[in-house]
Structure formats: structure tokens, C-alpha cells
Image (cartoon, rainbow, N blue to C red):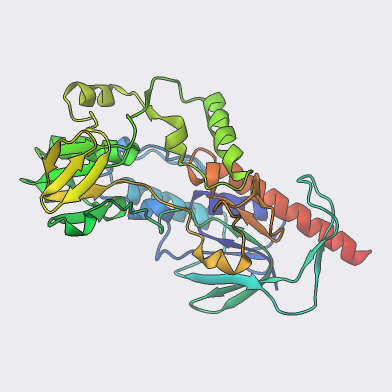
Length: 374
């Protein structure tokens, strides 16, 4: 039986694996990392080819190894895939891929794993048998799971009246590849985040006629994105997850950085929202103010939700739809630690969350070992 199974080999998962190894757990015999992707890179592996390193936001150094200098015109997906692969090799991280996790559930036996008090305030009388991680290859028995599956596999498609009647093409952020494929078409971009803004600018540069729809006025901010700002963002996101409410997107809390490029887009009229959608028609969109836009394509840049379907058997959700969290600790399930949920769903907090999850796991394993010896 393993001590820890890490699910996901993106930024948070690799960070967790690094700290597990650094604090004495042995790769393969004590812990493994399961990744559904065919090669390194996490969610970055799936970013559209036209998203270059120079145009990407949020590529952060992994702990212990800086991102090497790279060509800013190279696709970010290629740069990050190469970097993550080098990282896994340099630290001999036990990443198994491609492995799809289908379910996590409790092992049906009488062996209880006891955890005493630790720095996270986990009660001493918490008990539970090991967990089973079922995959498309084989099953793993483990004392603890660190879930780092992020959001990329759970795109959010909103529903509007008439959505099924629209005669054109509909695609989501994860399906976008290049603005060039929309040449000569009229594209409605829906969503108020960074991806929507980047799509609009790329499409405009390619000569595509666009319209932008957001539920609320876009929130551009000139605030400096420094460590104090990052901590404030995490605090505000964590207020919801600690109450068991579904987390807001990090961009919904941070706003959009008012860069010179974005200012130029506003001045050109590209980054000016038409407002929320009232309905869709076969020909296009009707906005809340009654104006219309005939579209050939609707690009839904409407974000993602936490990819947690494989944890359903653990019954983690509260009546409000969220999961009560204490940092990276799950209130309902002490054998599970989660990163990539809430504040750590962004690259803002992924490294710190990975480290926190690894240290919490180490603490619990040490307590268990001490209790067993005694």
C-alpha cells in the first residue's frame, strides 16, 4: 500500500510531489503521481497553439527549478510541456501516464488509519480505512490522496433561451486553436475573463468582426499584481470555500489587468462589452438592451468548474454545492487533500497549495507512524 497518491501532474501536483520527495517519501514505493495526459504539461498542454509564451499569463516557476529562458514567440504549450518534462526527470518524480482516474472510494475492510492532532487542527480521533484509487489500468490502495486535477476537463457551458436554435458553430475555450480559422466570419465571444479578452484581440488582429458579451461590466484594474494582492485574492476566494460555497473564479475576484494592450483594445472598441445575453436566435444573439448581433460563431469563454467527478463516492459536497475546506484540507474527508480547488485553481496559489498539501500529508503520516510504533 502507498502512503500518498497524487492525482494530476500540473503545477500544483508537481509541486506536491516535489515536497513529498524532499521530505523523505520514496518515489514509487511511498508515493506516485497519476496523470491523464499523454505527456507532461498539465492543462498548458491543451492551450491553443496561437497562445505564445510572450502572450500567456500565469506561467510560474516550479519549486526548485526556474523556467529556462525561452523564445517568447513559441507556443506556451510547447514551452511548458518541455519544462514540466525536464522537471519530472530532474527530480525523478514518479509520474505515471496516461492514467485516467475513474473513482476514489474507501477500502471496504476493518483496518482504520488513525490520525492525531497536527498543525492543521485535524482531530486525534479521526479514523478511516485506506482509500482505493480506481483507474483505467489498475487500482491503487493508499493512506492519503492529494487531488490536483484542476479544472480544464470540466468546461462550463451556460444555458440561454434559444441556444439550441443557433444555426452557426459553437465552441468553448478548450476547443480554440487559431483566429485564422474564423476569417471572414462574425464571432460572438461570451465571457468576462482573460481568455475572452485574448480571443477578442487575436480575432480583431486577424480581421474578424467580433462582439463581446459579459454578464457584468468588465472589471479592468490598474492595481499592481504583487504578493499582497495575491494574498488578498486567496483570502477572498477561501472565504467561500471555507463556508462550503462553490468557489468563484479567481479572475472574478482579481479583475483584468489594465495593460497597454488592453487599453488599446478598449480604445479601438474591441474590448467594449455589449452586455449580457437575453437569448439566442438562429441568426445570432439578442442582448439585454434589445440590440442584436448576427453571428456565424459563438465562442464560449465561460470558464471551467473543478474536475471532481471521480471523488463523487466520497460525498464531499455540502447542501450549497461546495466543499468545506480548511486551506487544502477537506472537512468531510481527512484522508483527502485538495489543490486546484478554490484559490489554488489559479497559478497564483498552486505552488503554495502543493507545498501545503505535501506538508499536511507528511505530518499525518508521521503521526500515524508514531501512533503505530507506540
